[in-house]
Image (cartoon, rainbow, N blue to C red; front, side):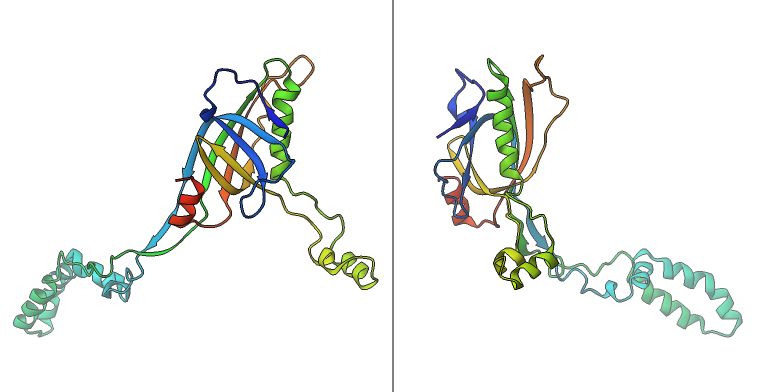
Length: 250
């Protein structure tokens, strides 16, 4: 097994992360290299989607402006302003007073209840892991920095992108020069990887994004002497308790 890493003598092994290729079940692929590096930053984000489905079921949703005026007392002010005109037109003062008393009873009240504010679970996204892997040269910059970073980039990129489009591939398949599976889906997606860090195994993962800090220092030969590589890793699917227990080796 080829281990691609910088030299980290004396550093606790639990502080060094190991990245390796795996299959969709999370099992390590034999005879593939391992990339090792300490993580200067690492964070796991679990986003859970909770919603209030009854939030818009109150009366305010039907006539928001009207109920806003009732709650704020604006309609009461409007009645006070219109009362002199109504009296001149022969309106009953007692009726106006009752109307004012009625609408003023709504002031400071709201239709929000415990029912229409209750939260319900509506799903979750796969778990994201943000890491920054550090590589720096001690004796051989190409072996200790560029080769492991190139391997990470290789895992992140598609295995192969087909040069031809669907029309050309379909014609080749009709002529018997290509399998239909190759014609319909001609390219090969990136591989899955696993990460072993601080005694916990996270697999299978996909590399959603990877950075390459091109302004990093180099040797006199133009070889990168140090690279801090930020990556966003993501689980293949959303996790439940059993998945998390298996993922983290509880």
